[in-house]
Length: 193
Ligand SMILES: CC(C)(COP(=O)(O)OP(=O)(O)OC[C@H]1O[C@@H](n2cnc3c(N)ncnc32)[C@H](O)[C@@H]1OP(=O)(O)O)[C@@H](O)C(=O)NCCC(=O)NCCS
Image (cartoon, rainbow, N blue to C red; front, side, top):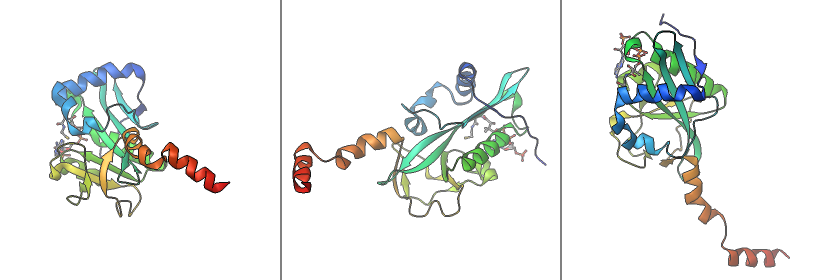
């Protein structure tokens, strides 16, 4: 049986330590990665930023999930990440605990589908698998072998197709098509009278 650790909701005051951990684990160049483009200008999904606290090192680990909109319909989904574990607390189950807790909460909140970019052999431990190539596209380069998904509701992947964006980007792109032009609106309201 894997070790378990008390998981808590992230506080504003945790942020500097989380950023430090991320800089150590992924370097400051992490900010140019495609997954960062999916988080830019966005905020984490409600209740889905979690930490494991540690008396000695401060934070043993951190995970967050971010809202996404997929394809022409903007189907809601989540991005898992970043997940990071303090170098002194790795390989004792902190990462798996954070993922299991996060995915369980996400399912409870009604989320159906989660994607991430990461090492397949690790994330397979909580059910992630490689996406069928070409089914979803990201707003930047991604190694298809690291582009992974898990269904929180069986069958959630079915019919999902197209570009993955943060919801606000999806709204910016789709609103000009969804809201009729002023002249069109006048014509429509004249027809309704
Ligand atoms: C990757 C990371 C999140 C894993 O968290 P963790 O708490 O150390 O891992 P856990 O204790 O939950 O799991 C440990 C198991 O996963 C394996 N594992 C850890 N990282 C792995 C990886 N990148 N690929 C494959 N297996 C991995 C370990 O070998 C160990 O296997 P065992 O149970 O057979 O001994 C953490 O090590 C980390 O933050 N690393 C720095 C960032 C990084 O390397 N990211 C790459 C992943 S995208």
